[in-house]
Image (tube, rainbow, N blue to C red; front, side, top):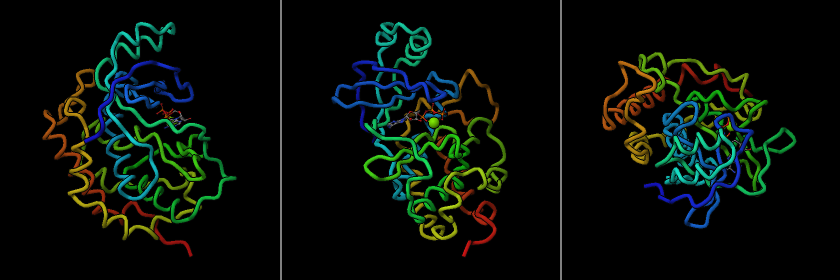
Length: 257
Ligand SMILES: Nc1ncnc2c1ncn2[C@@H]1O[C@H](COP(=O)(O)OP(=O)(O)OP(=O)(O)O)[C@@H](O)[C@H]1O
Ligand SMILES: [Mg+2]
């Protein structure tokens, strides 16, 4: 289970994030980057954050701790900025808290990344079809001299329009757009990482997602969307395990020397 906390104060919006995450304080005295259910891509982005963030952690990739945070609409009403006020009040209830890494800076190429660390991140991103790790928007932070992966909300795009499992499973990955693709070769870690993504692990990470985020999104009707949380968990598992089984279709054609 993810820890459950309650927000006590809204500190500031993080305007570099397109979804307008907010820095908040919680009743455990922690400071968190909160990603809201009412933001652009809706609760599905938060499902992707949990599933991919926790898969990353299980693969040994550094990711900030996650928690489920209860946000009272009153906190939103107190905000002078109208955009923030609307986002926070429409997101009243459960949201996703990402442990804030104070003093972290965005990754740039001057930071030396070990090839095996890069390879694991590239492998994960290819597996979950993450398009959000480009040189322009790396979604990687440097903190305590290590590389930390954040922002997995755009992964698992199949859940925005439930199509054929095989089409997603076999779709190629565009390594050219990935900021770490020249540093780490996913083939070198494939065997080891693929063996860790068992159906038990996938079931475990899906068990961390609140049921309500797995239900059909009334603002985005999709006739093929699973109708309850159990059906959704089982379908996510099918997509992920099918993609793993089709690895030869999305791994780069050849290992680099
Ligand atoms: N855990 C964290 N610790 C410190 N800073 C963070 C953390 N999470 C996010 N940030 C900062 O906030 C910014 C926005 O966060 P994030 O990328 O998760 O939001 P987003 O709205 O999904 O962004 P995008 O525009 O890439 O879709 C990051 O680029 C980073 O600068
Ligand atoms: Mg981002």
